[in-house]
Image 1 (cartoon, rainbow, N blue to C red):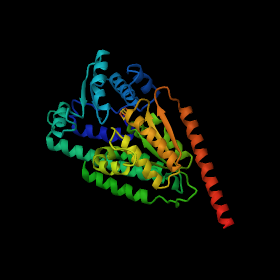
Image 2: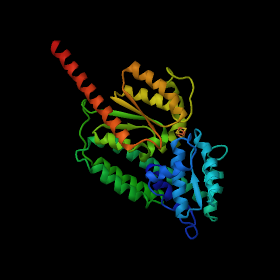
Image 3: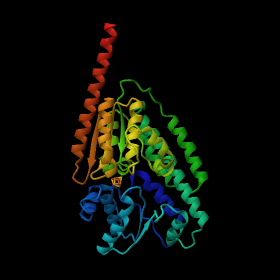
Length: 362
Ligand code: SF4
């Protein structure tokens, strides 16, 4: 379970399994129970994606699932599934665990053979077609959601994007061919373009979110940070999406290292170097503040933090650090967001006043 991505994944699985013998279960939404249950059966020191995953697996196993699928890698996350599989089997659950990544990373042929378990008649071409379709759906979904997030507080009617988004997620479930996808895309481009927007002004408070990928993309795990910021009428930017991880990250590595070269010589795993480069980009784009998010114990992001503190001092940009674990409370996060927003607002007003005073005295 990761944000709304469960929808294209559910869709993909339904399109490739033998529906006469396999039922794809729609995963339960993330809840307090997910993290409470997941944490009970996870090592204390494991980062929070491990614990949420355990909570997800447990809720599906209790519903009767006997095949679980895990995706991921790039940091120690790539080693989690062996521990999770063994723990769940020791608890008495009988199931098959499919990890999308093999020993040498993502290999389409290997993956095809793994998925044949769910449909003996599945052809390689159907598998590739449905895989490409799922990736294309994710890309369009990410593009639309990024557009809506960027422009959310510029809408004249504050409910327009929410209405479109809700219907969009329902319609995605019906897509099983590229022709339907192109029709869907055209239809939603028209809908999004029809939403009346105001112009961004110097008074708008712009906040960028950088940091760890799971907490960036799974809203429950960050206590709906983005939504909270949008409720304060901020302009919010977030980089990490599945499209970025799947299709763009490997090609942007050189650019990232060049951008961050004043501060780092080496990439330090997951999105640590990207956090530095994106922070510098947000400063160039005159964002008012940055929020760095990470699960407790996330080494790539811990490594990025002293550098961010240095950048914050050098460039006079406020950066707030939020760390999430199973002890974090929604109230604590909300209070910190409110304080950060108030501080940015005051800073902006003071800067405006000093500019006006300087102009008058001139
Ligand atoms: S990036 Fe950090 S928090 Fe996320 S899975 Fe890797 S180590 Fe854990």
